[in-house]
Amino acid sequence: MSITIAISNHKGGVGKTTTTVNLGAGLALEGKSVLLIDLDPQANLTQSYGISKPDSTIYEALKGEMGAVPINLNKNLDLIPSTLDLAGAEMELNAEAGREYLLDEIIAPLKEKYDYILIDCPPSLGLLTINAFTTSDEVIIPIQAHFLAIKGLTKIIEVINKVKKRLNKDLEITGVIVTLFDKRKILHRDVVETIITYFQEKVYKSKIRQNIALAEAPMSGTDIFRYEKKSHGATDYLALCKEFIKKH
Image (spheres, rainbow, N blue to C red):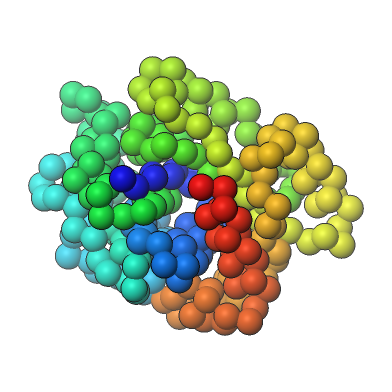
């Protein structure tokens, strides 16, 4: 049975999609079977792998028009892509009975096939993210090493606690990943100390440094390991993957 993990932060620009892409790719390289789900209407995860017009997306699956059809990306790594049409899903699905469990129904038949299912959540706390939390075992929160990035954490923790109480009693925040980190900056070091004070052992020791290769890799339609395996980005995400596996 797989472990399903929502990678979420309602603040944009914190490296959420970058983390989903490269954590998933790193786990696949480590021999784990991984399914990525792009639940963001911006479809950045889908576009990061150079997929522009998929035949089937998570949008059709949520509407019940067809089952989820994963696309094979690389060895051990599959993707259920997204589309801009997903932007209207929250309004379209609002009248559906059991609307918070739609994603759970889609994923259930796939869980036996994968070790890990990683869900790239939209930068919001609406119905799509609630669906991700309802079907997930864990939530991982990427946080930029910036003062304003930690100010909004109260809201996402509040939503996670409500989902845990009402919809998914097993849901837990199991990881916090510091991204866009520069150890030379006192502010970044101070922010990390604040994050550790709050989340303690849930904060990954592996921090993701600022690295231009991480921004360039999506333009080549691939992950950091295939784009530039000797970059700081590849080094950091490989360390994160090994720490992740050890934690699990």
